[in-house]
Length: 72
Image (cartoon, rainbow, N blue to C red; front, side, top):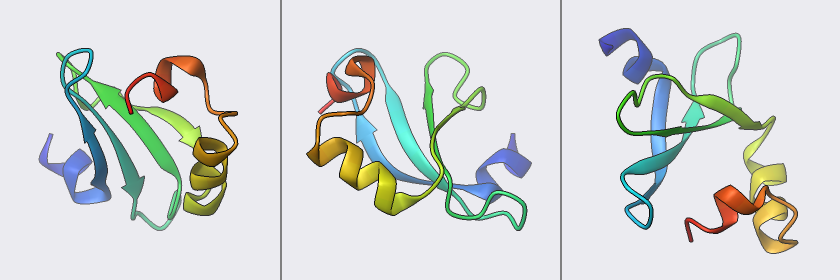
């Protein structure tokens, strides 16, 4: 668990549909990629975007998956 959180920094937290988050990866191999995780297994995160810029653009354009847009 500690290893996971050493590589992922939460950037958005949501409680709309239970506890969930978006995090940016800071490891060498996945630096800058955006992941989504939720309860109960927060460390079972899925890749959402290959970069912070494309993640923000997807939010603005509403092209992010509906399940993620519903968290805002």
